[in-house]
Length: 127
Length: 127
Length: 127
Length: 127
Image (cartoon, rainbow over all chains, first blue to last red; front, side, top):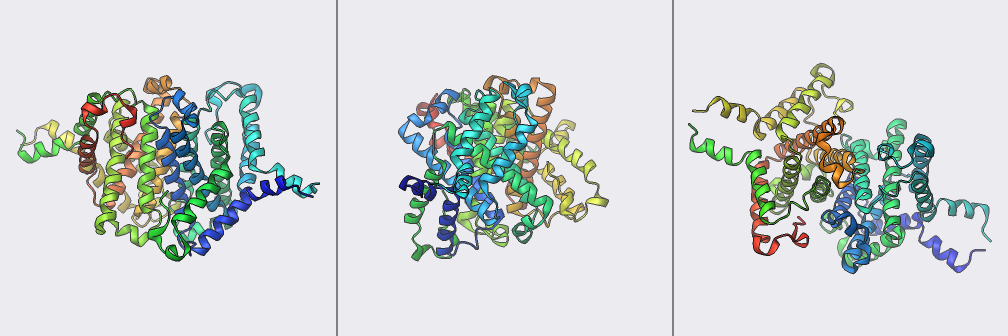
């Protein structure tokens, strides 16, 4: 039997988020705009806004950005926007986001064995 | 008590994925590369690869892309890559991805009430 | 001897734009922010804003966007921003933008001969 | 009367590049793919590839990337690709790239006067 905290956690899972985004679009009759190409463009646009929050910071400032109330809130909001469009795009394409990422991670584990990849930027994944 | 299927679902949640990505980076001593700016750039690069899969398709072809075995597999893989870097970036910044998206969705619900937003592209969210 | 129209044309060339952007940055002591990584992020951010102008339009609406005074002005301004950061990045890296594009075009002409590439989306360049 | 060097410069100008790209597309009957939305997606894709070349480099490594023969050639090729799609998109929309950038620079000069903007990241342009 699930405890209340389990239930809370379930509410906040990716599949629940996807369902809420689907209903949000349906209520507003926005499915017509939510084509794969349009959602991919929107995703790219939101990533652009996220980069804009970080672009002029030094690496050290960027590492501390969440300690800055205003900049940290903007970064969190942009990451939320990116997740919204990524989740919506995956839902429209009927792709399980976490499964797709897990499969890709398994690929990377094969391509970059610990013994040879350790500490090497050259071995960092390119795709 | 969680059933086996609950457990399976938990294994595939975002927080579990984040933990696996963290361990993957730590084993390879890649944390030094995984700064917020670098991860944001990598996220943008993966979104670019995703767009490249869709860019020359007609809207109709894109809507059916998952029915095409090769193109569908490439799109799923690119979405997996995007999710990997988004999850890793959020983890490094200590942001809960689904919470951040849920908060942004609540904002959008306030800004785009159903009554006025219905069917209108002009009301589609810009950020 | 250059005619007035030649001179006007020269003023508006890429190398002149690059020089103006360099002076603009120097006067404001912004060279410290204009590293290759930061400028590449800014370029990506501006491309994201450009996509945001087009993302919810139908293909037909997007083809006519310049006939719409407000949306057309926004698209032109975003394209101007993209060109600014691309020119600035190329200048910082000492790359001639038009030469680099011309060399890439010559590559594409070899990879996509007219006889076989005609009308085929599959042969459209991927990079 | 134009001198030989004027002629050479003209050959490598943006308007000449735009004309070559137009002819390249027409010969292959690719105009059907070169809609504003598709070209904007392609532009974003190429910027993603450019970022991928720089993402794991330290700021110091990125500043020296052109001194590295292989990495430098890749960066120059990606910048060429970005310029190709930006030029093609501007041509399809009938926008003069350098004029659009020059107008945006004039805006920025008004918004960021030298006296107040000097050395301040906070004043660096966001769009």
